[in-house]
Image (cartoon, rainbow, N blue to C red; front, side):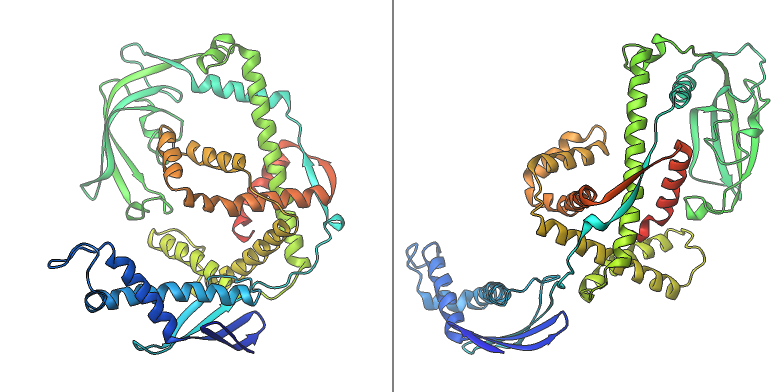
Length: 452
């Protein structure tokens, strides 16, 4: 197929599956006229020694700035004309086209090759035939009481023990410590005036146990081994010695569960904290239930619908994942002993699944005119800001000054809206589950979330 629009001649050179390729020829007169137009606009603003402002000869400007302006014009006309090719052929590019200039010399025609993949034609979706199980979990009074007990445990007051008192689990020690490996101190292995509750599991296994029975004024050598999966690769599996000075032994005073406890956490009374805990549990359970339904739906869509995927999108997704894998390997993370070949095969399949599901949800949004509201964008910014306590104003100001960055929220918001739309059409069967069952399901989903 070949056609000509004004000074542009377009020839389709490939139309195979989702792949398209075009040869585009732009007449030299188009480049020259736009270059001259740009130079004339510069002449009206240019100041040059020996000439009055705005009266610099065009010929002189071309000699001095011609190459720079021509490069600018080439980029501009390629962007404009490639966009026209997309529009004129009713194409829906999967990713921005690849452009390669195949022929150009000053004063001659410009020819470039344009390669792209288009989005596939997706099958029609009948979501009224979709059947999903909706877990329903009620908040039990015992769960609320356990949560309040945890509040009480975390708000204990400590008082200095009697002179000579021996430390036991539950007591709090004020200590200085210095850690060494092979006699050499290491980064992060020292602190002064540190408050450590024995039995809390705050330190690596064995550390706190060796301080049980200590007294104020004791100097103790604690010997431990760092775990093989310790978060710092240079410490993994290594034996270490810590010189510990015990300055204080403090006993915990029992914290009564009453209105005073609630007020410590900013609530009016015990009834108010119970209500808040119940609401939080309820929200969490609904979120877990939704995650389970989402996984179930994604599995169903992945199995039910098959269509050609744009390889460029799959490659992009895979390369993004693989970069994360490479960073994880450098950080010494355990990758389950798999070879690069095994990992590549596994994550290639994950990439294909993600692209397929992304295309389906995107198509649902398009077909059903699901739009993003300003309130939804504001909520997304608010959620991100909550991740940086004390820096909320900085986050809000950043997006105010860089509104183009808000586009990063579009995909997740539309995906969620598409999912909610499907749920509104699907047949849901409620199934009562205990919190233990629901949490187990959530843990299982978290393990396989990378495949969703």
